Length: 127
Picture 1: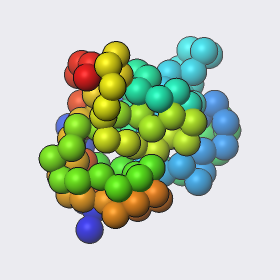
Picture 2 (picture 1 turned 90 degrees about the horizontal axis):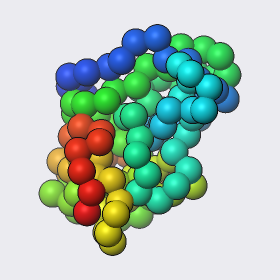
Picture 3 (picture 1 turned 120 degrees about the vertical axis):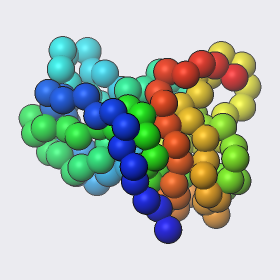
Picture 4 (picture 1 turned 45 degrees about the vertical axis):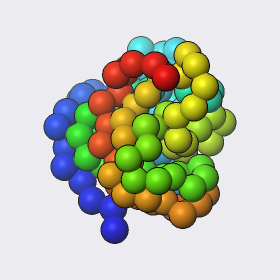
């Protein structure tokens, strides 16, 4: 079962769109200052994992580092390095080159849409 231990959550961020169905998905800085948007590019830089369910313009609680539930895009094994999965805001096993690693899986996820526990420190490096 997924669990949480926050280390750093930046304050003052606002959702750029309705993210009420995106709790535990990855978010990035939006082009508008102070706003976050769903991650949309495979292996892109993200600010963290969304912890609440904000609609457009509401406060977005984002965990930048710590232990958090995450939503998988496919099967993930405990110990796998993690990256943004692409157009969905979900998490994938890090593969390829030039992709930003956001953390590591603390437990396995059996497939797409499964919530699992990971430790994240967004912006920690590339594969």
